[in-house]
Image (cartoon, rainbow, N blue to C red; front, side):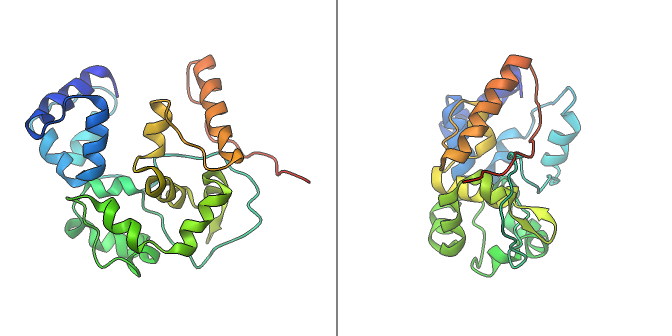
Length: 212
């Protein structure tokens, strides 16, 4: 997202008191599904135009925005099914409930509703399963590397980061604010430095397991 696009977002958000990029990020966390109202009337161009226009029409990729590096987790969790990113709260829950039921039913066993329009973090942090929150102690990279029915848990790792920091990990990486939970997570910062050296993305490699 270029600065011209961000400036258009800020202009649209001034009526709710948003006057900086940090404020815009905070507002998107506190009232995610209201972002469509802010963007109404913004004209998009460039390679992501269709994605932005699709979002304004109610279409949004539900998967993880952050592709964490992978390690050998040593465990499987086929009982856990959370394949929806917190970013999916940018759409109102009442419009997307069936998708949540299909792709994140582990969460919906504990959530009666996903309050996408007003401070969802306060509510979700109270009812999110403690057993899953405890996984973050071993690091977000480790959590993302756990497989559930053949799929990695990048989305679960995103939820845990969001619960811990009230921010999205991919945005924090882009803004240089990523907060590691364990020493293993520092690889995210190292990969970002390498990307800057080579002027592009290098993906999310599978890292060798640690021994000893």
